[in-house]
Image (cartoon, rainbow, N blue to C red; front, side, top):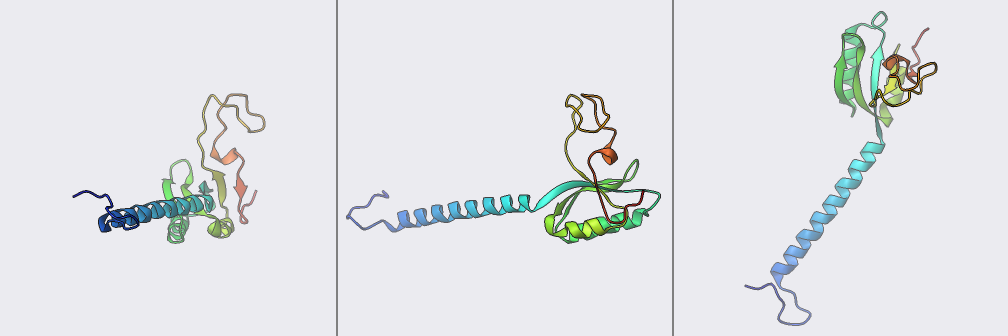
Length: 144
């Protein structure tokens, strides 16, 4: 059975159904793309650390659970050299993160050995001294 129209101005019902389905699928795709773009703009990825001597590990994991329950996503946990986690933090939750005692935030990004470092005093082309020293943002509870 062909999908052509035999009378001018009158469409075949099956053709109409296919067209409607295509339009709905396209609309769904556009809405989902816009939604994922707005979510990406509303959250940022950080490495969140705490000094081992100041904050018990249980408190750090509590903060990680709290963040996950409030729209964040935990990507990796650190407990050997660093105490903390890598996470995506919604912008709306950033004030809560910044209020955590002794919190230290770093942008979670790739560092390559062949790119110049932006850290003061670092030799050109070297990798930074580590996460803690590279352009961090200190929380309210940070003490020197």
